Length: 91
Image (cartoon, rainbow, N blue to C red; front, side, top):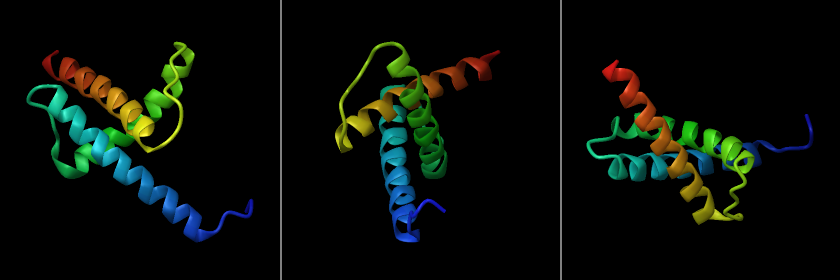
């Protein structure tokens, strides 16, 4: 391993779940009628965070660091994922 302790791994995972859950919930509120329940929102938020952290820098957007920046980026990504899921479900 690279020196990362189990406590650090758990802390990172716990933070990702909290931020992902919050971001998924916010995205469900922004995109009308959205939401897939608590577990679905957490998964959507984590997926949105991954999407946002990859795509936004490629587009030249940067929101800095910290908790609120992470939530905002994750929320944007989760909202995009939610809209895309809705489009696919209609087709």
